[in-house]
Length: 196
Image 1 (cartoon, one colour):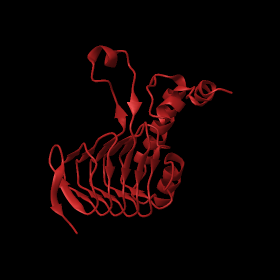
Image 2 (tube, helix red, strand yellow):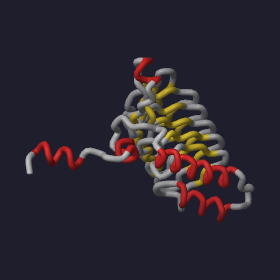
Image 3 (cartoon, helix red, strand yellow):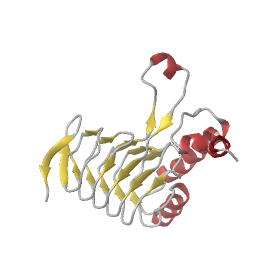
Image 4 (tube, one colour):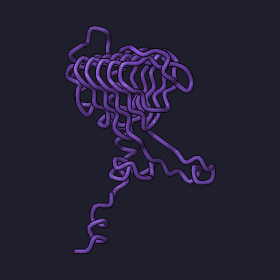
């Protein structure tokens, strides 16, 4: 078997496989549309739970999230594209109204805290208007380390990695990777304090 044959065999075949691999994919693909519908159904059920329905919330999170739902605490409402691309560490907490566009993986470490209205985006679109109008998308994963606190209304953009023990100030727009042990703030977010 030649190298070209091997490459062809490993190329993603379905739109879901392309999406997961970070390649251009068609978001209107029926399999992906059905997966988004399933996530919306689960988040709808989750968002309709009452404050004392902890067991029901836990079961719904375990079904929705890729991993970590057994110890996560997320205040409704919660919004996401797929759910199974979201992985959270131990003792993850997200306040009201968080949005996760998880066309690629979103990974949080242990003991992460998210303020209200935090948005994490992995979906990316072409800059060129004509190409964008044709509808292709791709994703770039987001990774957040341990013991990170992301303030309310912060936005984490596609492809960003945030280190351990970081504070992201409320309202920040994070477009670049963030090292360990710092406070970042602003739009675009920059290091404003070293915590070591």
